[in-house]
Length: 449
Ligand code: SAH
Ligand code: F3S
Image (tube, rainbow, N blue to C red):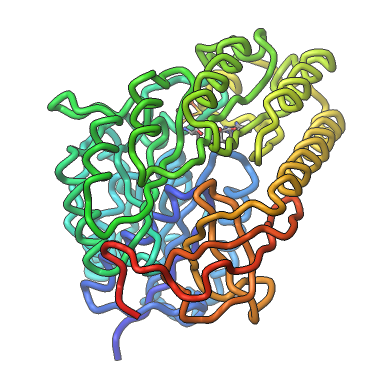
């Protein structure tokens, strides 16, 4: 019987994709997936540490495997991702039954590390390769078959004072355009129609051959059979006219921009070392909207950064009201050891106040999202039909080009096709619709039937 693996992921899309790559590597060695970590021979906790919550949840779950390890000494337990990179050997002290600590660029050696451990029984820490370029010759075990993530770059060279990512993911390195095109072409051959390009700061994508993000978009836009290109994350600091132009030029590049603002106050933005001010951010948004009028816009915001006053937070609320984001990821500031803000600034906004600010922000954003979604009523959108709705199995779900989730009734045959739907209403997170075209439109590169 084949050995079984279970990978448990906490964190962002980048972490999810790293897990897919580890799955691909284990599958190539004959391992089989199992959903319950108690039935696995290899368990990997792949964890983000950008905020404290995910880290604590993953470590607690890893600790709960102790009896399983005592019953089965051949069980291999690994912890990977940002937490592993950040804490290294200390994790072995903290969790006595943990066997492997695998860093953010070493995970491509996971099967060898497991085998080495099984041979000599020595607990291992593999976190050295942090600044090395990555070359991965494996097909990630992407889950959907229709939409998939593609790493276009690793690491980050920015130094936002709150952020642990540069420490845990190392120096920025961009994969060559032809390498990425090859991977995406392979995905298209397997039926994938949508890719999301992943990087901490896609606007600073720059290869050894001086190819930039716009070059990459133009190259991918040429791929027959690929319908949709998404990308995340854009950084206001390095967003250039050329990128905005490429987004407007390329018909396959979808109409959503994720542009984290973090705060609406200039003093806080300076303390965060974001390298733009609120005026510049507003200007970028209007420039972008001028060229891309139907785009949706999403963002990230942190409430309760050290020394933030009520008035300064109110400026964030004002920016949110003015820009009217379609959606936002909103967080309470969480000091991460090793970051500049944690080392040099006192986390002096009381928790109660942070919570209250976050709550106000969420309420404001939810009301704007709901309002914007209500305005969609009557409009016709193209959706890529993904499958049955998670909330209502009798209905279908898919995303608009603007990255909004739509739930609608329709024939199962629409799954995997582009359908035109007319919006009938919406809540803050979902649009409801009716199908306009009953049968899939014939499309270049579309699978028959
Ligand atoms: N390069 C990515 C950032 C990844 S972290 C980007 O620019 O989007 C994703 C988000 O987590 C950040 O945008 C920020 O809003 C939030 N975040 C990061 N560190 C944080 C911290 N210490 N406390 C609270 N939120 C944080
Ligand atoms: Fe973090 Fe800033 Fe880079 S938020 S990932 S240091 S752009």
